[in-house]
Length: 319
Image (cartoon, rainbow, N blue to C red; front, side):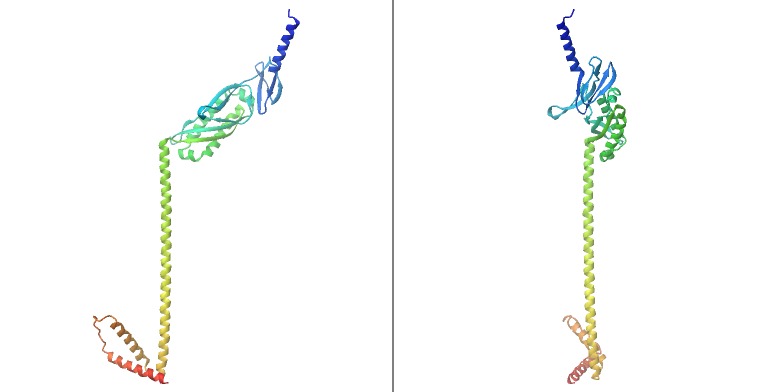
């Protein structure tokens, strides 16, 4: 038979166990899935909750954590926990090789941002939620990249992220998970592809530089030609204007001389002919002493006209 002291001890132990196991304090942004006799019973909210220790127990879930190891390396740690984190979680997946549409092997590192929306589904609809999300992301990434060639993959990162997020969000809805974002951290092509791309970029830069230089030279030559053309036009206009002014002056002078000679009773034609002969003789003399000068037959008449010019000028002056 149990003594009263033994009963008190057993009662104290039962109360202690009940208090330790039966009172569950859930932190903010966390929850627990409770089973009663192996069947889903309820989901605990944040704050103070009471369960029956013998009949109720939390259902554990497999979870992954990334911790920093030596030399700043990332170490993935798997644990079984009864507390489900409802905050947005980031999974940094290890690098993996994918093949593009044009058969180029790329090394890609992806980040996945997701959040548990329905804890019950995340526990009962999938055996290992982190592994399922990782494998689904890897296979989806291979499928998406396999539909693109190398240039599209390198230039369409945002499009790839959006497409991955839509596919993963739809697939993980059954597991009570909401995929918020997918980010491709690094896309590393093979070394020979990198070298070929660098050569191509250098060739493109050299091509653009040559085109710009040629365009500059062309524009400079066009401007130079236009300047020369404008200068020649201005020069021709000046010479034309000068000749017009000289001709107008000569015409005015001839007109005045003709009027003066006509008033004195002389012949203006003889005067003009004599003037032209004198200018021609002046030019012939200016050619040098080694030139043979031929005097026209009518030179004597011209000389006599010069004397007549002198007489006409004297008559005009006497008036």
